Image (cartoon, rainbow, N blue to C red; front, side, top):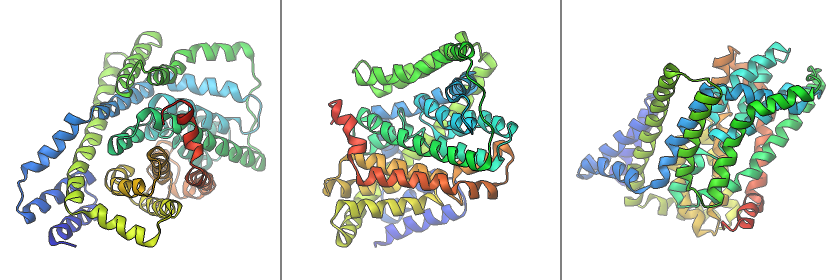
Length: 429
């Protein structure tokens, strides 16, 4: 390892342990690299700005963030919850099932696990606690179901992966449908077993008049993923344009149809969106200069050769990648993993003949598992914070949902067609 690279890694690790923002850590370590190397510090700015100038697809990320915040601020989350409740009827543990179904529907609008857990999750946990569900179980199933968001289209992490790997966003979105539905099915099975064992209450009898009313009220919100996906897959819109249309549509229905957002509410949505977009943009920009250092030091080549010396089998490689991401996910933010670690692995995956859509869905799904994995899973802290439930109990309840996630991860890792047959059938591969 060269001395400049050693200094870079040392500064990055130091800032990580000091709990400073990771993006600033990446920028600081890159600046130290250039100073030791005798390079021009303006290269940091040039690399960051070139990322935004040359990657049109990246504009979709702030647009989806804005859409998620609009959906959370309006009445859309309440209506989705009511609609999903009508689907479950009298089954035992119905509210737990509603939790999973509502997350699947909401994920088709926002593509964000954090938005799901913080917005829809608040309603779900409160309703489950009121009906006698254990608070820890309610938080755990909310955290687990929120991970569906970044897998089912649209998905902010998949858009970022598409930028990193030059992969079709449409193919990634379509490839994520089956894993998301698989995870939903496993979580619903888990809820059914726990509800029977703990004698959780049944849902209300379906009154068709009320269900039709709830469906009609939720219809405008439910059309959001339809507009997005039809627009992308018919070629009428690019993913970036679809993100703009989705944001505009969400704003229109929230202001005029549901009358849920006034000028004050809109100001708050813009404030939160600017904060979230700023944090994400800094991370993406900072990652580009790290990628430059990785390329200049041929770090990806060295790591690739090391991995290939261990195994030249693509499934062995995927196993190693899964183990590393799972371990990193216990301690690090998913954005850091995606923007620093994944780009190093992409050339190795290509060399082993792994389809980039398959690889993208495997690593993205794996990173979402990290959001619910103790000790630092962000979704665990969010659900604990919004419900006032002790974190220790949630960590205990999340074990079996995590097993369900790992089972789905194993399926999509070793059976690539699970993620590839829909994009192939649509002619996207």
